[in-house]
Amino acid sequence: MTESAQTTESRTVPPARPYPFSVPDRLVVDPTYGELRENEPMTRVKLPYGEEAWLATRYEDVRTVLGDVRFGRAPAVQRDEPRLTPRQQYSGMLTLDPPDHTRLRRLVAKAFTARRVEALRPRTQEIANALVDNMVELGPPADLVEHVATPLPIQVICELLGVPYADRDRFHIWSEAIVSTTSLPVETVQEYLNNLWGYIGDLVAERRREPGIDDLLGALVRARDENQDRLSETELVELAGGLLAAGHETTVTQIPNFIYVLLHNPDQLARLQADLSLVPAAIEELLRYVPLGVGSSFARYAKEDVEVGGVLIRAGEPVLGSLSSANRDGTVFADPDRLDLDREQNPHLGFGHGVHHCVGAQLARMELQVAVATLVTRLPGLRLAVPEADLQWKRGMLVRGLLGMPVAW
Image 1 (cartoon, rainbow, N blue to C red):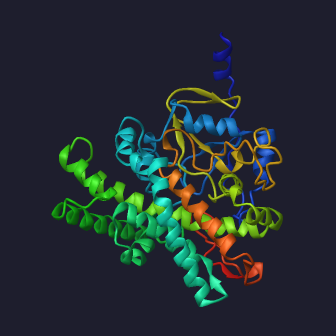
Image 2: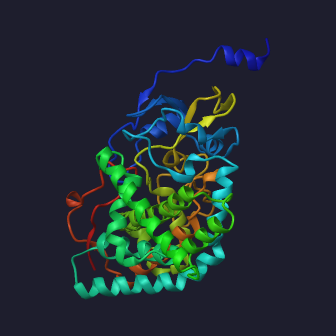
Image 3: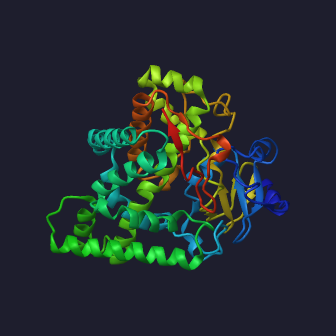
């Protein structure tokens, strides 16, 4: 018997742990991840819904699960995917593997290149300045979430995609269906998704009546109408709707998260205020440091037997990769639990990895850079206007973040 055959025959599967390990506490990473990285880097977990899964906690193992072609997302559609939600989570392109995923991603990727995103920076700065002006005029205390963090990414994605900003209150509410775990009843999730698809369908019809409009939605409609093999009508609507929702939801959440962390690290905030050249590195470090997700989601399924972290994953088994744990791996990041704006090597997984690496990563980076730089320079005395205990955090959602952030300056 060969050594690999012996490994296959003698594999021991540990009992599954309930997961997430604890109720999310603000932006604190559960210490269980550190214990697992040290002692049991590949562990069995049972999420509130769906089948059991393996959980990868070390950086290299998470990269393997997300980037190795021997793992895929497509089987999740037919399986009882491990998940935090009662119903299967809508995840758009994230349910596809190449070549279908490649076909759709190519249609939108050129709108999010570094060059195109940089061209949007001056306009994003104008929007940020106007929002801060308005907040200053209102006077403290003011809600940072309401007055800056929410409208900034929404207005940028509206202008890029070609969606009326005046409709923001409607589609921002509907977008919660994309990130809700239990914050919305199952029937409301479907209602909101239907509303979002119907709304995008109306805009698609508008583009067909006025085909000369130069925006991303118009480009997607032309791609559909000029070569229907590239994009079905359902794919067109869901792709555009997914971009609208995902194109603002996480950034809306991360802007106050980043400011919250900086306020709790005043030495790093002071350094940033004194030297704005640190902003790009600061955003990368905050992307590493802040655990955006409440837990790991969107399992990858092994297409064949694969060894990861010394454990044999059998073909067909789901594996979750913990981005939050990987980003605190001390074998990759020195002093990983410390916010360090001078960190030189920072290969974080804040935007994922592999073929499903966030298509809007460059846009999110730019928006976060503009928002944070504007807030820390325009409002040098920025501080919380309420006691820490009075802050309200999101519950029943895939992401961690503040419902509101009253600030003074």
